Length: 124
Image (cartoon, rainbow, N blue to C red; front, side, top):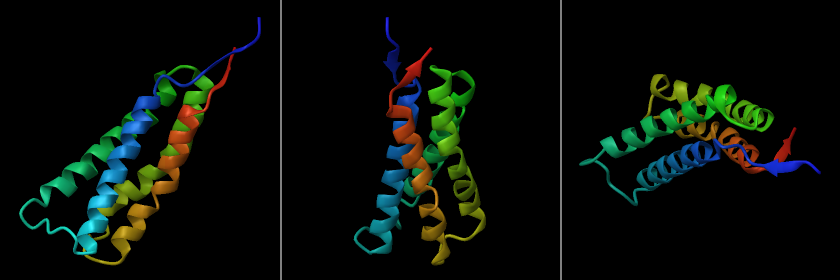
């Protein structure tokens, strides 16, 4: 028989990390554009940031446990560089032009991890 093609079983974690990041970026953009005033609930942006970090870390951990191994490791390796800008955000200030630029630096890695986790790979 031929090779069976399958996605990584950690794909939902990559989806969750990307959704959390997108929601946080959307809220941050809306606040910066003065479409939404979050003075009464700033904690929402912080909660979304924490959920982005947690789901990103969980998705990167797929390299250790998810199946198929090669696809999981590829997806985790694609996502792993997003950890650097996510970790730097609290230390670089949040009321400067640098904040959205650092936050956006994580986006390509989140998308790459998501795509790699969803692409079927050969399972041997």
